[in-house]
Length: 469
Image 1: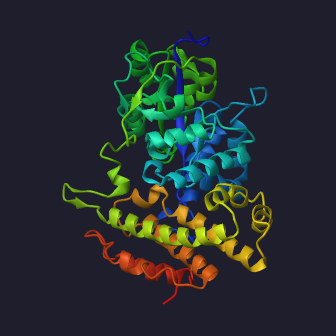
Image 2 (image 1 turned 90 degrees about the vertical axis):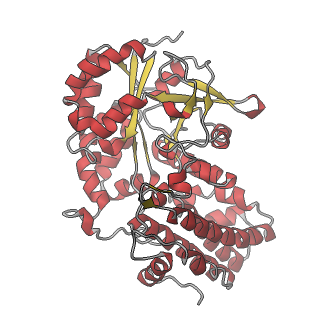
Image 3 (image 1 turned 45 degrees about the vertical axis):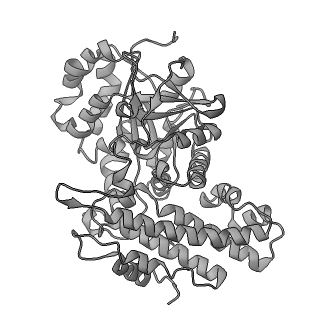
């Protein structure tokens, strides 16, 4: 039996923005659709991240932030950034736990990634968390809550204690067990804990918050009565941008819900780290796999696209195949170089996070990890590691989220691929990009006037990328 109050509530928000702009410099530039702001990071910061920081909402919820968003906030909105970091573990609280969770470095749909890429995304994400929050994470947010058993096993291997899933991702969820935590059995006698959100109430907040009559009305009429069947812990989990961006002004809903209204109807507000540490986790569950919080058909939205209801998004499958071929070409050349130095290429990549985070210079990293490399070979290896990061970045979930091929994120992924191939070609002197344009020739959409090959031509010209003719 838990030693904390029986009726507890946790609100969880995941905050993230896709990488945009120039894939080599990171400069976003002007985005006219974000007017009157310079770009969408500016606009969303003003409507969501800053207001929630000022209202001290991050001190009262569990949350995760995508690495690209945190890096942008650190550089462009340092006061907001510092408030978020400080909100993880307010002064006087246990420094080994807090409000923040780690997440995949590039917001990759992990069940669709190769095993070694899953591992890199997890380890880089943990390294980013430790770099920013100064402690080891207990929990890990899976982008889109996309899960399979291999992903859970790799999380456990990396020392992660728990993650979050939706009710629809659990087979035969125990009655009145609430959010858990529950145990998912893994091979070798291991297990990992999962918290399970209340899908109905989380969706009400996500998609209908403007019509709920405010936090007080909703708490008295919906949340309070839900205590009867919510179990020891009720978990509300959604996109953090709901509170202020997707729904303007609803940072106030979040503030009043967690500071006044939920306690008024009998809930003790907690965070996932504290609840996990202070409660038992013995009930076992099985997951539906692969699954996510929004797509039960084999993750088709991000894997193959779909052709139904008069809408054809199968360009997503064609684009993914093109990107897979890019990754394979770069991997093959990178493996050859690393192994000529008697270095494990994938262990080397896994350890590359300090360079990405600005905590170590690339030259110093290579000198440390590959001491036998001469000056020329070290330079080649540095190019390949940079190409590896760009190749990982191709697979951010945002590449496949929008149903329009000519939207900014598929274009950004193609730019990352071209930039990665350019670096790999410079490193080897060989043309390893010959398949890319033909692969992109079949990336077409009935809803777009531009196809993959034309997008490639545009980004090569815009970002002055050097691809062999």
